[in-house]
Length: 222
Image 1 (cartoon, rainbow, N blue to C red):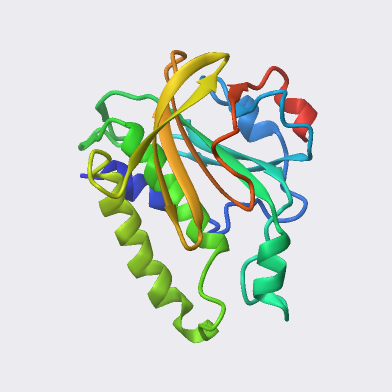
Image 2: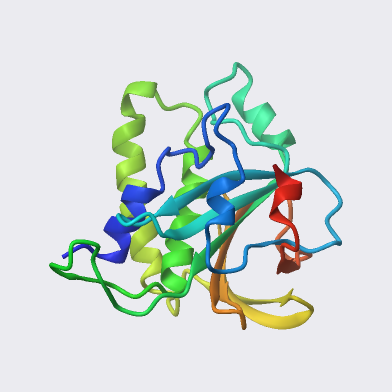
């Protein structure tokens, strides 16, 4: 049986969440049967598409939209920490709210998506851009695997002490989110009235002043 976390891990590649050059097409986003969310009109900076995640049958399950500076992976430039301090970005992850459903081959069941699904995808997304600057490249895979598992444990315990509650507007309506900060940035997760679970992560841009809204025209981001 394939779980939500296994499915998400399989469909979230590449690790940095960004489609390779030349493939940042809007087509995948247009294939979703749920609305996409981004920051609301109060944010006037750059907006950019990242990548969608699909199930085995090709159905779009989730996707991310970036806002602000496109982040570079730490240690891929000389002055890593200085560059990180300058980068200001927020990424919004939209996850289709699905009930328990059969796998594509009909042999098992897939877990329902939940706020935890959005929290995990956001946590992993943040990790993909923020790994310790002093770490050797050869150790990165082991570190990322360990931290990915930690992100799942945290996402599975949203009522735990690692999370606080933050109220932010979604389509103008105050909405409660689970929120946590780390040395790498911040992560939050909640749900919308439109049947979408929202995750978000960022660095250098405060989460406290953000608002979310349905993207009216996703092709404008292409």
